[in-house]
Image (cartoon, rainbow, N blue to C red):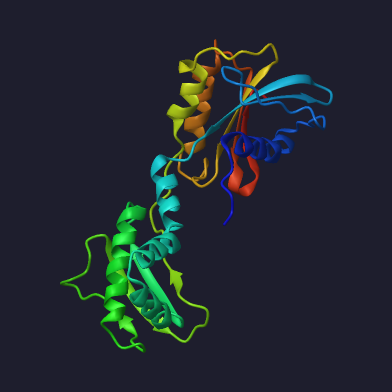
Length: 246
């Protein structure tokens, strides 16, 4: 299992990915991460000297939760299976060894709900032929949190799962930029301070007027703030899409 990154480790990796896009040549070994109210990143940059960077993610909470839930199918299956008697665990494992389960949950169904659904899926499998293929639920008994669940066969090293995340992408969260520029308590640093605003999933320029809304927010709130510059990125594509002032 991949170990989850700490907040500091994630911030460092994000900064290291974005710094070249902002034309910042970081002096090797100079990155520091100090306790707040220090900014997220302090470092030395070639030709610039000391700089301070605060990071803010612009992805909507809805998007983050939706994609987080998308990755919980294996966990839900394992939790449901481990709660069963040993004899049933063995039978479910044998019945699902060649199974491909296509299951589409509601976007807001979390791990607990998905585990409950997987418990029902496994109970259905136990009640059916080991070679069963088709839809596990009819329209009248479909769980409220599921759109469909269909079993196919013919694979190896199962079970395998297919799910989807069909929610709409959200516009950039301007309040997060404004919060950093206006509402945040003063940062403890003597270095020039910049804001790196990034979106990992919701493209900041993916909506009509999305980028112009960001420009307006920055120009209104940057004046009088502790920050000297704001740079906006699409992290997923490693693109710099906006910088003020240039």
